[in-house]
Image (cartoon, rainbow, N blue to C red; front, side, top):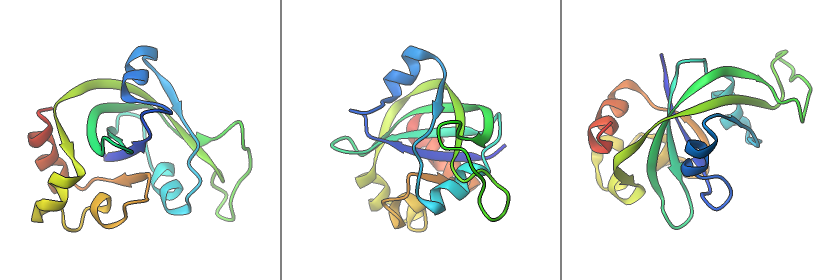
Length: 141
């Protein structure tokens, strides 16, 4: 089981929206690096939901309930035969007990190589096991 972080603008789609609807298709990813990460997501993987904008914090934990597949709104394959635009389906797991802000991550040397700190515009990123363990403690999940 892998762990990822997905970024969202809470005014567009928030973790509270996911909690309310109980399951959603996570779509709209267009960046090639982010799409590459999204295509590797499998059912059972855990996902930190990060709110951008004014919040800039990890606010919730979700689970991938359907592995990456071709976006039905934008069909087509890339040169590798993979879906050009992929989507996954998510369900909420829990609200974090303690929101972890971007400022806190940037101030902590353990996150110096974490994509959220290094590649601020990337909307889908893997979370390695070491970072995941620290985040779980910090978030209280």
